[in-house]
Every structure is written in structure tokens, then in C-alpha cells.
Amino acid sequence: MTKIQCLAIGVALLALAGCQSNEDTGVSMASSSADNREDAAVPQVAEDACVKEVGRTTKSTQLVVLEKVYSPQNSQVKVGVGPDKTPWLCMTSNSGIVASVISTAE
Image 1: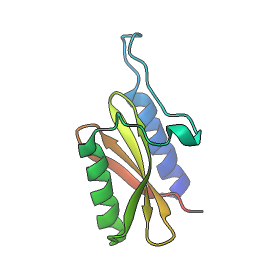
Image 2 (image 1 turned 30 degrees about the vertical axis):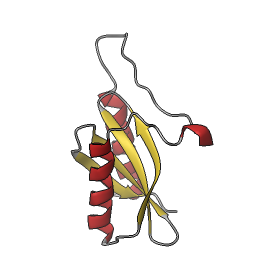
Image 3 (image 1 turned 45 degrees about the horizontal axis):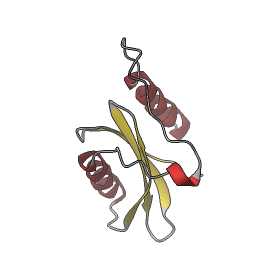
């Protein structure tokens, strides 16, 4: 599977997770502005699970959280790897179960 296919699947899973029958609860996604890149609503357990899984996948200990995006069911955490902070995208449940980890480097 290509990186683009993996990314599309991850985005689709996150979007589907926000679909609910109750219209009062919508998906809260951070915008692309620099002020909203750190979403404090992402549970620490979800962030920690992503950092751990990216580290395991990349065999790196030099990791930094670049961006967090929250939705009521799932969250997305972008982790920078290595000295160049190569971006990796992690999709996780808010309880810390990682669904996917993919490199988003070009």
C-alpha cells in the first residue's frame, strides 16, 4: 500500500469516527493556523501511545510532538523524528489504541 493510500485511509477513519447520530456533538478539528497546532484536548494517553509507536516503528528515541488534533472519538498526533524532525502521522483512539502510523515525509 502506498503512503498516499495509507494517509487516505487514516483520514477516512478519523472522519468516520466523528459521524454520530446526535447532531449536537460535532467533530472538533484544529485549523491549519499556527495558533491551533497544539490541541490541549488530546488525552495524554493518546499522545504517549503515538510517540511510543512512532519510536518503535522508526527505531528512534529522538522524538518530538509537532501537532495534535482532537476529535471526540479519535485523535491525530504528528511526531517529528530525528534531528530533521521528519514528520510521522499517528491516528489513535482517545484511550491510546493506535490505529496507524505513517511517514508523511515527501
